[in-house]
Length: 197
Image 1 (cartoon, helix red, strand yellow):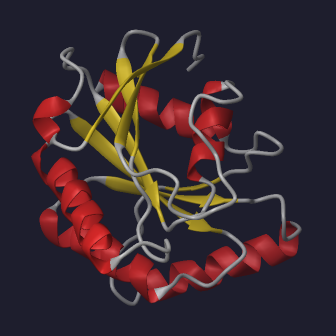
Image 2 (image 1 turned 60 degrees about the vertical axis):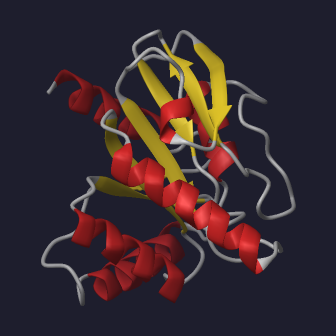
């Protein structure tokens, strides 16, 4: 799939505040500072479509980007270690949960994991909740250019083994780098196959 147009379509906190046009939605989520906004910009080949920040927790709203006038890329707030109050954390968690469970147009949720680190408890809990709720999802390992070929392979195999302690089989898994463009075609082609189903 080629992205010829990527336009910011609006921000919301509630499912019914989404853009009026109902199109297939593909959402991206991960722990704070996992590289989500950088990945979205890389996929769309637009430098500042999604705002990036060195500070975790920059995204506080559900942001919709219309792609090729055919589907939405959805940037969800991160979960985890953002330095915000407990009340704000709960509000964000509820907002994310409502979107994931109530958006009839959500075709797939991409859960981002940092390829340099062991999968964390908060990631496992989030992924397992998706399974219990029957939410279709795939995993994207970010920052795939940071470890070297063997280090990356070993880290992903270790994380996959951890996941298989809870799952009979793994969901689709992608490795990306916002620096090199690694994984861009694979992720976009996967989205294209889901749209055509």
